[in-house]
Length: 533
Ligand code: FE
Ligand code: CA
View 1 (cartoon, rainbow, N blue to C red):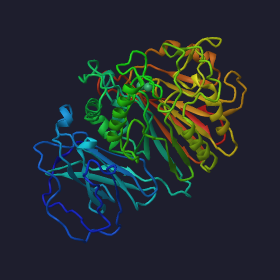
View 2 (view 1 turned 90 degrees about the vertical axis):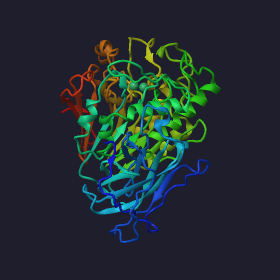
View 3 (view 1 turned 60 degrees about the vertical axis):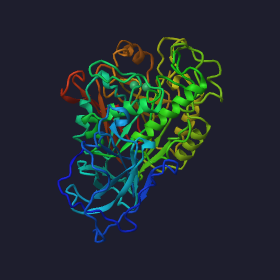
View 4 (view 1 turned 180 degrees about the vertical axis):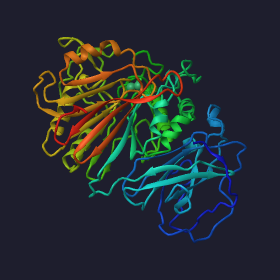
């Protein structure tokens, strides 16, 4: 999905007002999110014969393209220029570059419904975020970018159904955890062959520590912006990842490794290179900015070390998706050296939080006002109880198990009869888990509140968990199934009467191009508990 030389030299650039709205190239100005109106008429306005931007001696689209955060009338288009992904600043000189973009009604791009220009600013890593407007609901569109003598391949995106529409069927991809040094991204090759309404990413899009493994990415652990940018470039240069971005819009949240393993709010992990609060927040600011630059998100550019990313994406009345951030605002778990141990003092009280007060209130209000058939939480760490040993001596304190009162507050919202079919989509643990969310996790007969699907990793190793799976399944009656040996992704097919999850597993992600099969399928009937299909 990287670019190629332009084949048609007389490229039409529509310059009518109302069609083109490019952002300012001034690095000190507002965030480079452009808002572009669209036109349904064929372009009949003035044209130029020259594409925008300077001449590049080599392909500046080596990081591919993406779309994201779909709405019923809009989607965000993304690209970031880099002629040499692993060179300093991606091989780009520190000047702004004007990028052209086009949106087509079909895959031939013969009917252009919107087009314009956006400025790739070196202050934001030569990334652009183009926010389209005026699109039709529940419709597939195609898009491409061009600059100088280069253009990208044509990629596909899709708007969501209109607010009042109850769609017959939606298909979502569900992915997480793609440590590049631990495997090939065969799961993304497979995902790219599917017709998806959207792909949701639950975090660990990059890892801060790389080096040599199944594959090599020789970039030292970063603490500053240039280093994080380089890691994103190293990951995004992969053709499998680019292919997966090119077939559907992505809805992305982050987990810990976009900054540093198991960080908690403003607190670094034990043994961090940035151990004190001040140096950690400076590092977090760099990491958050690099994430924003590289993701197709409908969010203003970060200012300082905070970046609110929780947001809602609604697919008409069938699915209301809430994208959560369980990292940035959580209370530190200061009581255990290695994340596993007895719960911390105070963790059963009102001051211990996973989401932070503002996000918690936002989610509560959003759930209370939802009329969707399925209410989905896209988030990072496991929400189900995992009693690791009999008694209360061993919990994974990085998961919701470390925050029992915060989980109870969330469950109070989810168990309301007005909130239909809660479904939680999770990543983080490099293994697949299916289970129910229950009012009492230790009582087999307790009322079921909803379902959690934990998706396995795209490539990150899950072997550490394999030996504990039998005991965890045994000690936690609400858990139905788990596996940790295989990498893959989860395909969710949703209709007004049933949610179906297919766990697609890669035979062996340590070698390229092995087969991908459905290992198991699970179904949630409307109003019921999850069962094996
Ligand atoms: Fe991970
Ligand atoms: Ca993680």
